Image (tube, rainbow over all chains, first blue to last red; front, side):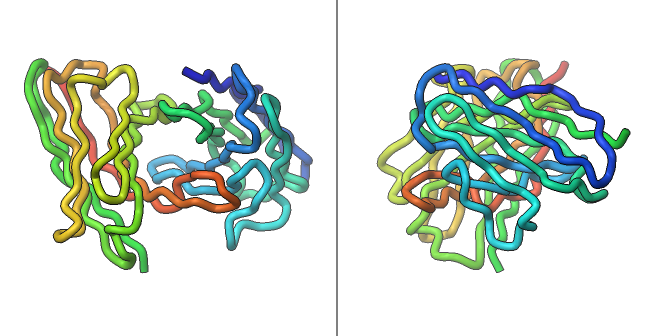
Length: 107
Length: 121
């Protein structure tokens, strides 16, 4: 199985900060990498797919990059509504696997 | 409007069985592959299972293989997860999710609200 490792596991930041979350795959997955945002008590929402394509309606302050084994999710200027948990997921091979999540908290 | 609504969760004893359902509306269900994803209380997301649009191809995560069965009824716009030999570690909220293919890559574009399964004596 392909292992997905996110870092950091948690992050404290302030409104207006630039934040980067990384996701590393245990083998090359090309660009078959997705990012989801989940708020407490809610289902996950797709943010980015195919490593860098922004879901329609998602603010442009979110961006994704990477290919192969190393990927990043960047929030250029944090807003209050961005405090949530973020997960990466590979869709290169079955079984699909998620990273362990990165909890973004208010400093 | 795309909607996915799970049901069938509840309290079940270890070794027991449960069948989850996901009723969908707002899109042509028979044209889409589907997934189940679960989340244990306070933990991260775990991919559970996949089924192709016609139901002929299925995949499972290692932790549920041989115990869970995914199926669908395209005439009734419904997705199912039959869970047998349940264990305490199967306790989780179970989400159904629609598969989308964008830029040639697969992702999950719509999710239900989840149904909680608790395995305990």
